[in-house]
Amino acid sequence: MIDAVAHYLVVNWVEIAGWSTTLVGIWLTTRRKLMCWPITLAADVLYLIVFYRAQLLSDALLQIFFIVFTLYGWWNWATGVRREGTVTVAPLPLRNALIALVAGIAGTFVLASIAIRLHASLPYLDAALASFSLVASWWDARRHIANWWLWIVVDTFYVIEYGIKSMWFTTVLYALLVGLAVLGLRDWRRAPVAAQTAS
Image (cartoon, rainbow, N blue to C red):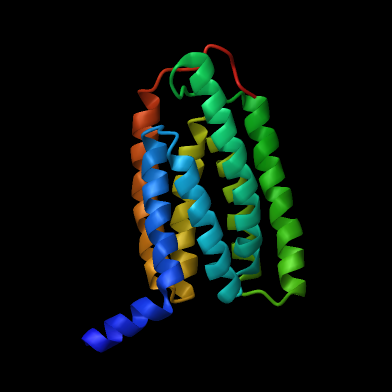
């Protein structure tokens, strides 16, 4: 038994490291701490490797976008802290929310068509989750509370996807991320709101 556990840890150390850094990064995000961004960046890189190995190609591609959004979010939050003294929450105008959701739907079809050509596993589910994860990540980087609502839905479906793929560490991770998204929603509702409306 101990040998089997040791073997699993050695073989899956990248997923375990991604798991750990993701949990810490998201927890720090719920607390609106700038340190969330470098830790999340490490998680993005680790999961890029994990998803590529599992042939979840939409998720692997998603990690590249996450890296870009993480760098932007880090810059945007740091700029806000310099201006306002803390990480504030920015209102999300209805028009911008609708545009982002339509972009998520369009992105689903684009990513699914690419995933099918590449013979990816679970192309439609993977593509939809990847596309709407980008929307949620953009809203997070822009400091919109709505990011947590979307993460609750997306992460719930990720639990199903990773369970199907028998990626148990990642399945448990996403179950925990649903809980963290609920925590983030609660905590961000108590946060100060930005003086200027962010788009």
